[in-house]
Image (cartoon, rainbow, N blue to C red; front, side):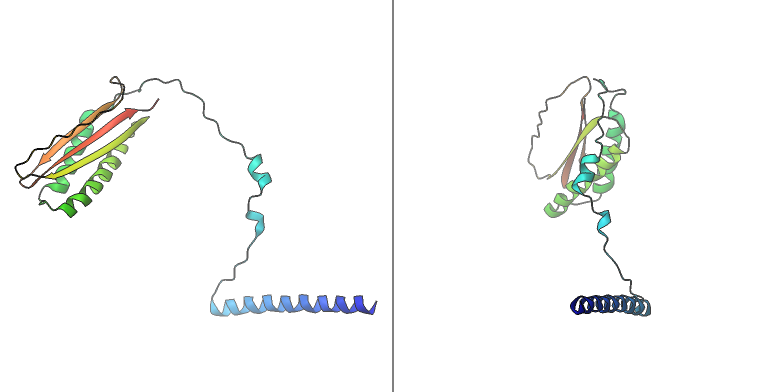
Amino acid sequence: MAQTHGSKQQAQRLEQGAESLRHGAQAQSRENNVSLSTVSHADEPSQRDESSRLTVRMENTYQLGPTKPFPVATVNHILEDVLTTYLQEAQYDPEFCRQMTKTISEVIKTQVKELVIPRYKLIVIVYIGQRDDQSIVIGSRCLWNPKSDTVSSYTFKNSTFFALANVYAVYFE
């Protein structure tokens, strides 16, 4: 019994020591304006929680065609505005053109997405090349439905380079 009484006293001393450490750390953190954080394992998901979650199933719409046609004229104006704005006074430089193709593609994609055309997948491709008494042929092939899928294109030219921007709009059934 003396041993159990001694172990109880030892456990009480350990608890008191831990309590004083906690209070001391809190007082010290208040003095230094440092927050004291604790970790709770109650927020961690368990395997039981994952199996109890319901999955959301979307129903088929059976919509086989677009409700409104893709606005080709509006997208052509976006292409013209973006290419003219970004490239009007620029000169050909390979590094500059490499960066501008990425930038212009993202700007065009963002502006076309702002039109909120439902169920269309967009592909934006921008080519920039040097004008130096040479020719280039750019071709593309796509498998699509001519009733709902379309392409918008605009070509910009100045004295040192050309730029071609294409936006492919493919209806997603």
